[in-house]
Image (cartoon, rainbow, N blue to C red; front, side, top):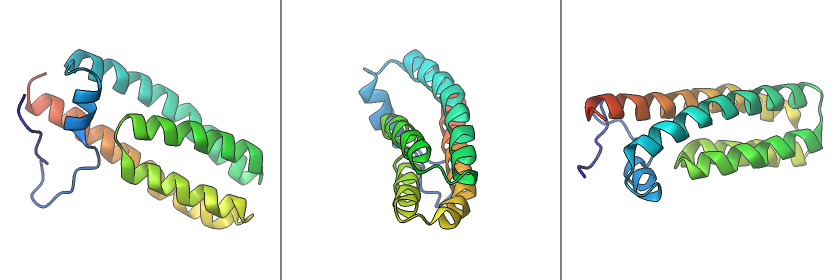
Length: 126
């Protein structure tokens, strides 16, 4: 298996793709399946997070954060997982506004990571 390289010079990969592939037994088709499930489930969780933050629902936010962070770590999207952890700390301190401010960054990080995986798959003709 060849090492996956960032597509843009000096771009830090948002995903440890080699680790993800190894985690899934080197099965590229499994990576594709997991990514599709991830995109569907993440969309639902992001909607739940957005709603719970607007409603200042601490428990709903925490439940969604926990689920999303687990999915992000499974998919080796560690930067996005760190953003979720920071959002959770704000909610625990009842600072929903700062958590909401990070929501846009989180969605951008996830989109970037998904795009990175998809571009890498195309570049390597999976």
